[in-house]
Length: 245
Image 1 (spheres, helix red, strand yellow):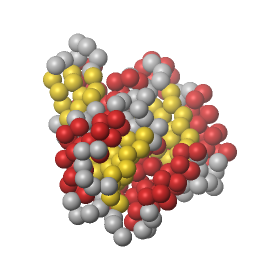
Image 2 (cartoon, rainbow, N blue to C red):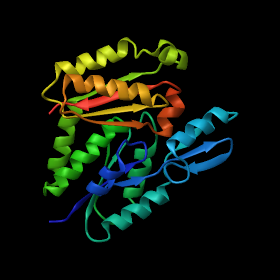
Image 3 (spheres, one colour):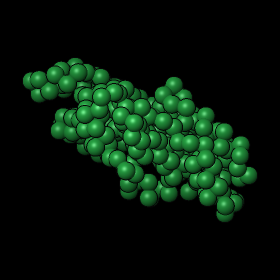
């Protein structure tokens, strides 16, 4: 039985520990700020990106990984006879999945590429569950069926306020109440919650604590989101993602 390896793009929200534990290959996007191009997560951090975006004369641009980079990574992963399952952000956000599909046609190994329809931590859930399934010895069709079920039970709440709205008065606002209510409705069926943000770490930690009050057993990942989301959402944006079992 051949091994199935998971590949994704750097818009995903995964901790370094998860990437290592599940052996997930993350192919970086690039960001261009005032004519200078950086590789996401390689020579620019998410915190650095926010600062550079604020100092830039024009809004930064994000670009999907080049086809050649995908080909290189896919050839490396399939060299030992393994299959590859590529899980990429929604096509509505980026042409990354199309570049991956083009690359897959140029590689001799067996590669399956899917558009997960999401990004950030939601995309991370797909990758983690696919990796767990692969480790358990499931075949590709079984993994894809499982991911399809996850997609039907995915919940995402996103808020894009301006900076004054989120910081003035120190309130999380009505949206936080909706997110907590949504989680409360599904309590018992939710184990993992992802909270992503642009520049509001303290407030998101506060929100995480509110979730813990609903379900003390929750595993919550609170991290800054990726440049592609930062660019389009701006200061103060944040999102909560989870799925029911």
